[in-house]
Picture 1: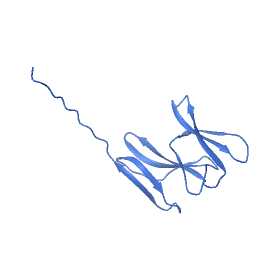
Picture 2: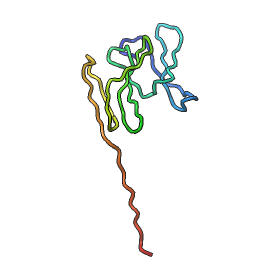
Picture 3: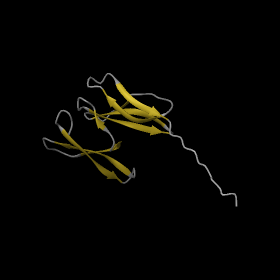
Length: 114
């Protein structure tokens, strides 16, 4: 449910993107809106007027804001390195807390020597 009570958000499978995307159902009635570019992990902005999500491209994550009223998309961050693992937006939307970092792993081969 959006913070302002106007929409119920859910998700659906978008065949062309081969992933789950957001769908908005107006509580007062009306057409269901499929948001083919907004991932199902998007969260409501505190005022209920937009959806916020982390977009990762070439290993770098940035937060994006999708406006419910006009469908415009705006970058909230302009990071050049690292991934965003989690985030939250302050109630007045003037601050963002983000957990960022790199994913690394090592592969070790253990042999018995035979």
